[in-house]
Image (cartoon, rainbow, N blue to C red):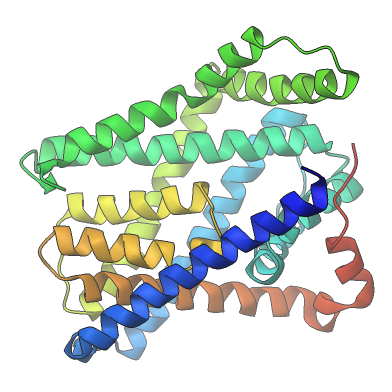
Length: 329
């Protein structure tokens, strides 16, 4: 099967998934119209707090990513220049996924001399460590605060524990799989070498205790900031959750961010939030609407930041041409 056909099938698959999810949500609210009459009250001070904590979370998140790229590449870029690139990349991903990732890789190499291999290594290492830390934290919170908390009929700590174990062992499984696979074609040898470098960098970083401690501390700060935002949004729906439940919603969002099926997992995340909300006895409508509000607020903040940074040049012909071309090693 040639590349154009694969590209078409991939695009078709994403479109079908999005339409199915959107259709399901529309059908649900059509059949449960009363569910839209949920009390949603949010005052100006709450909006200010949500925006403030969301922005500080972006700062913390970006700085943590910078720590990881420095570890992988040995290069320590200026923070605000780094922040601008990361924010613009997230902005472009909203409209032309995955062009934001391409833009980020190009800019990192152009302005800081960070190779694409180091960039990919940092990205994968960041995603893996970020998700692993959050899942471990969720497991600990549920286990000690509310061990009887149930999810899909099972103990929630057991469900989270199984998922966490799977995530932790993913790079180890990839490492041994790559060692077991033998290739002879020059292109496949090159690909295997690059992937092996990325996996090895991820595992080696996890062995550095000083570095790991720094990542954990900054990761906890991101988690606390995000949970505050979640709490403010949830109480705006008169939806009061205990800490283990908040951690589950947060973990679900992180999984949705790490494993992207369609751009932004629009529709998929909303349905997942709805199912989780229903499992907690609150109602599917609340979960869908909360996910939607979170998405709207988060997207709005990214757009505002990008407009401040990039202005009219965000959609220049040169920029759009650059975004359409994948970088070469």
